Amino acid sequence: MNKKIALLSNADVMEKSGWDNSPLKTLFDVVVFSCDAGFAKPDPGAYLFCMEKLDLYSADCLFVGDGGSNELAGAHNLGIITVFVSDKMKVNQPEAVNIRIQQSDYHIENIPGLLEL
Image 1 (cartoon, helix red, strand yellow):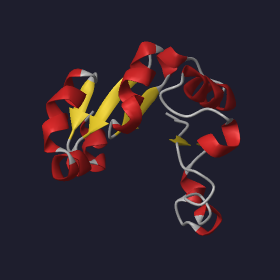
Image 2 (spheres, one colour):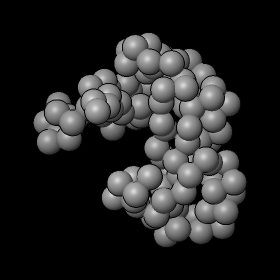
Image 3 (cartoon, helix red, strand yellow):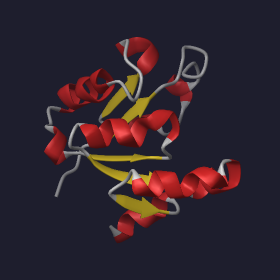
């Protein structure tokens, strides 16, 4: 089964400056940086812009993130299934982990946990 993979990032121009040389670049079908799109998560426009590029509807998407910038709630409000990845949050903001779990459809501790879903 073929799946499309997108990167939807709130990165600014400086943060994305190394993207062209990143070994991760070839892993994505679509890459959307907010500084280029004019929308940042959790603005619905960011997700809609990305879905348009993927040619998918929200019901066909899965959003995976650490929950920063209210991104999980933004995706969930559009009917996108959400997965909270807690490994970084447990270190940087342990008090926010339970809140993010409640905002998500699924919770995994790290990206390899996606394979179990």
